[in-house]
Image (cartoon, rainbow, N blue to C red; front, side, top):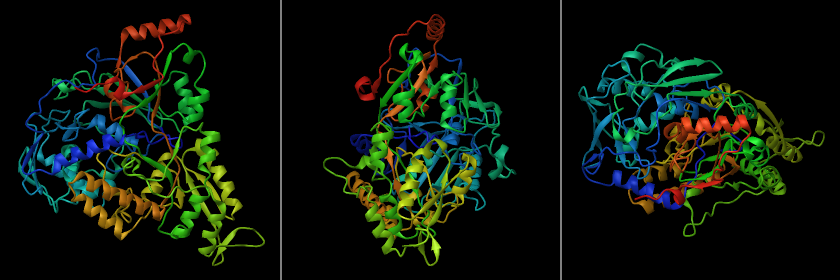
Length: 601
């Protein structure tokens, strides 16, 4: 997980060869003439990751970070809302867990025209809401219009829908959309679209729909919630897809209880006392030093370092480029040169991390080396840059000043356990005449500030989706859209042109080359002081659950537990007996490499 973030659950790792396969997949989805998805070879078959031994029942308690301001994925796009919404609501399509081929969910099929501009969606005739009402094209249109409503706070989601015209309702189960232009991501946007029930949300202020979602389409429903404490979900027995082969052996827990804690320390204590069943938020300190004792020695707690194919995200200190002092590129570069990342990694992070200098680490290999500048700790270089930018030291205070204003800014924090690194940065900045004040806010207040771009510098982390597009985070038109992912205020005409170019590009190699060029231009602008990342995932859990041999699936993180683990009565009995009698359980693997365990046929 992110060393600095207890929020972002999707810490993503990826081999370059797998990125090639994903891009090939996108190519196949887009660079064809008229087509119908899923393809003609698709059939309902058992999930290759799911265990035939899995049984339904029992409870699973899982940490889900701090308590959010909303569980509404459309108005509050966070890891918490994503985790909850993915269990409550189904998208139009799924992807196969190994091949990433399209698989039907709410939609039976999607037809794509010869010119790649017209998409006809056929909802499954059997698709119904949890109250028994049919899921219809009216629900689709209502959701679409709700997101695009100018008053809606669904800023992150608007840009993908704005590429289409007004949906045409052919009948109760058929929708036709016309795209404004050819774009490989159009199919992805539609396949992942989540429909909401019109008969529940109509007439309500959608921006205020934060915690109550009584009518759902997914396999789980909310059964109980305590503000600031927990959210409990129950597995539905009347889910309309229950008898499909591909879902057998998945979503096995009868009850899922998400627990919320304000800090990582509280999460760690909750795990050690058994209040939660897993812990995927371990820092290097916890993993290497604190995760010791009888429970670990006797394997009551399983502890794995997992290497799979989940893509690598980014993390660092975004700077608000909309206003001084961070509207000056020389200042932003100076800020990057003042963070001693390598010493922090060596002395505080057990050397577990690599230093980031790209938003797309996975695009580089021996044949395509990363030539982006790696910003090293160089105070003298920083001083020269600041001097060039017009910042001069006040002889009385030592603080840099420009136009009579001191260089004082606020770092908006939201993860107290990260402050030990911020203090080091704060002291380094002080040495060159910059005063950094640290302001801590809780998760809900922090997200509100970020939605409104009300910050100077902050701590943030983003996961990388399998289907990547730089548009939502890096296009200039997103810089002024409230609640968008372009929190930096990043605007670059050349990057905009390249984003538009890659959206039309179906040649795999050419698209990768464009993305590398985009990455290089972004790094030259230095919108974020990039920090560090790991290329594996850490997970600890009380050793009483049935899991696939790979523990996680191929492309996912601890969300794999929700989908593939199960309560095994025999393992639970062995676990309770071992704890009661002080006996050890059989040892588990320290390191799990997906490709070494799972052989694809």
